[in-house]
Length: 148
Image 1 (cartoon, helix red, strand yellow):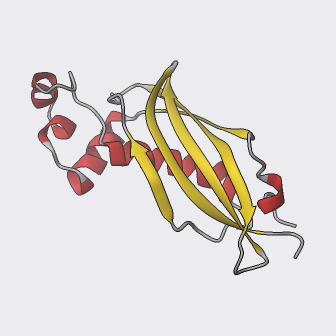
Image 2 (cartoon, one colour; image 1 turned 180 degrees about the vertical axis):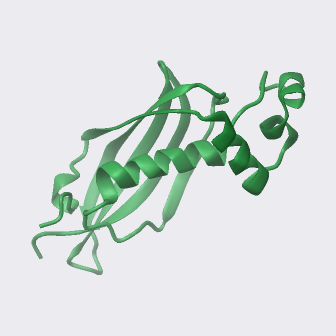
């Protein structure tokens, strides 16, 4: 039986997804490949920007959150993907050496009207640096059910 199915994801449930330290070299490699803006690649450009220093791409931060979500929830679950997100925010910059803590919260859950073995789960994911939210996303996950 899968570790997590639709029935396990009840509104109000919060799942801790662990911590990660932002590795500067990995952050720079990601920026060079996917988001080569100067403040993601160069110390001086970062310092001169409104961000206040060399900082991670929001897409990098989101990818780290996603990896934690896969490792702690999706691997071995009944996940059937996602039709998309309604929110993706990066309210604070992320810097090399930051320690981020990730979590998810189940906002709502309902069975699909057209597919009886599928549940739709609205989830808000957050990454924190201390008490500050540095990334927030809200999306729908599709999960198989145990019972028809």
